[in-house]
View (cartoon, rainbow, N blue to C red):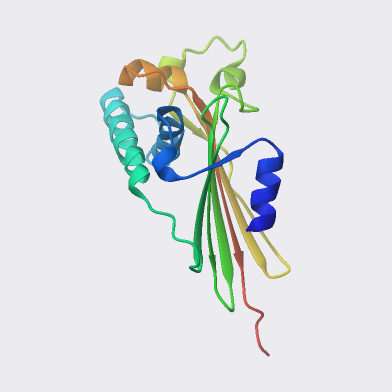
Length: 185
């Protein structure tokens, strides 16, 4: 975990604790909750608005989480101070296996891709497109590691319009890595 923490800090992320997350970071974390609530198709506007409202409420609840050092479970939070993009690294280590779960929500200015970039000059109206565009999940296994990667691009224009809140989180990614014990013969 120390190596990962050092690498993340080196590229500009600032360590934080849940109680210190500002409203921009809370909105970013809410986007990670929102992206899990919608499938691949369209969703009615009232459901988008209510889901965003609940995601913001639930995300604000993480401010009550306490970080306990010295346990097998580690929960680390990082923010990009200039934007409020957020990275949560949750890990668990045991004698025979370990796991690391990373969730990252990138604001428009930090994200390499956005819904608007995907649309380009297509002339399609974002208000008539689904609130979330899911990227193809990827899974890899090798050398005792199993890795899963999921990503979603948020239709911020539509989510903002139906929720009455300015949403500027472009993309959300989650990665899950498990070290598996060696199989005995």
